[in-house]
Length: 262
Ligand SMILES: Cc1cc2nc3c(=O)[nH]c(=O)nc-3n(C[C@H](O)[C@H](O)[C@H](O)COP(=O)(O)OP(=O)(O)OC[C@H]3O[C@@H](n4cnc5c(N)ncnc54)[C@H](O)[C@@H]3O)c2cc1C
Image (cartoon, rainbow, N blue to C red; front, top):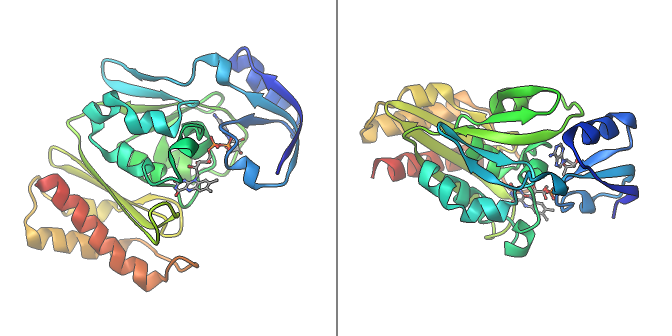
């Protein structure tokens, strides 16, 4: 278990930022579920729960998800379902259990950029933007590749478009980490295909997506699935080999595209 010397409820983002940068041993707290797996000693833990950042807000052209929003809120949100289909619900529904998802936050899930992350895979298929207190608003795909830097993830911004979406994952057991995950989205003739847990960080298969027309036939889907494996790198770990993941990638992407075309 980790240890904190002090616990501070921030009363503004400015104060949280000053505290975070005041000492290298200070850190922002999410739901503490990942942190409790470690054994580090920290100085001050900065809790953002009093800043009303646990909300999903629909704006004229998008949806904003505050960093303290729980995975369970995301799973059950009607607003998110209306705007993006079931992709976000399906990406979190296998994570441990309901009690866990009631505490795990989206800030703590996105900021560390876990290579196994289901939710990062889904968010990348939706042109998500990340709003960082110091770093400003940047595309999630840029944030994923940036070196780690101390900052506060304030909220996520998702654009409303005519999204059709699907999320697929393969796990050894229902609540295990994914062996591989795939998120597919389309709006008009534009497709996005994202693969996560390769076991590296989530990434877009742009060339594969570009092969798909608005309504692809079987041959076009098959070509796009082959391209995913040519274009992206896959690796081995205790959950599966590179070769197994390459086979899975074609199957999950095919299922994702077919679910959207149905
Ligand atoms: C046993 C277990 C199984 C899991 N299985 C899966 C799975 O199958 N798929 C999956 O996708 N995920 C899985 N996860 C990850 C989980 O979904 C959460 O992502 C994780 O628990 C972190 O969320 P948290 O709110 O608990 O963050 P915390 O543990 O509180 O924080 C994690 C890190 O994020 C930082 N942080 C938190 N909030 C912010 C913020 N707003 N700004 C800047 N930094 C911040 C913290 O400083 C810390 O370094 C699993 C986790 C555990 C413990």
